[in-house]
View 1 (tube, helix red, strand yellow):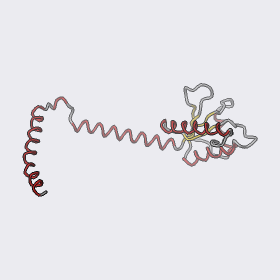
View 2 (spheres, helix red, strand yellow; view 1 turned 90 degrees about the horizontal axis):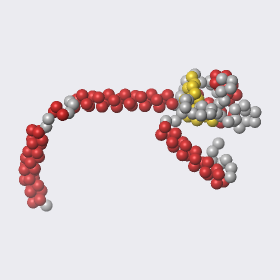
View 3 (cartoon, one colour; view 1 turned 180 degrees about the horizontal axis):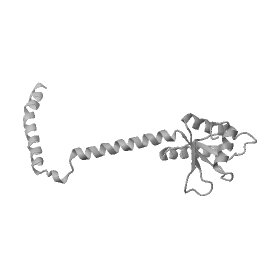
View 4 (cartoon, helix red, strand yellow; view 1 turned 45 degrees about the vertical axis):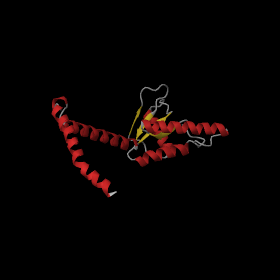
Amino acid sequence: MSKSISELADSIPSLINSLLEGVTKQLVSFDPTQFPPLEASLEKVVKSAVKETIKHDTTDRLRKHQVFLRNLEPEKGDSDSLEIVCEKINADAPTKFFRLKGEKGIRPLILQFTTPEQAIKFIQQLSKSKRAQNFPFPSLIARPNYTPEEEKVYHHAWAEACKLNDAVGRKEHVD
């Protein structure tokens, strides 16, 4: 074993020399005008990554304050209808809201709350209130405002729950 270690130690200088020769050949043939300066490219990449991270972080924090509300009829006007819903479910009214564009039928709303806790309370209170006999908006559906990736997972889980419900013949796996 000591013989193989000494042979390896003896071969290291020749390996280093051949490596240096290869690097030297590449440096001689290198044309720096073909590539932008590394510092400039690296700076652009870092700036872009930081901007993208800040954008995603801000969007994620904003989404935690939002509720996706479906099936609110716009007959009385969104403001009046939301005021009635919030009063009936005993939850704080949203600070801002808007309808999403592009969907046919009743377009869903995005509700913006001051805190994530208010958004969660709205969803929970609506779920409880829908079970009451005299609730004026039984078809409302509220959920967190998911990212597109989260929404795919949500829809997949919902479809699985519906299949399980169909198999047992009653609404057991979703509420």
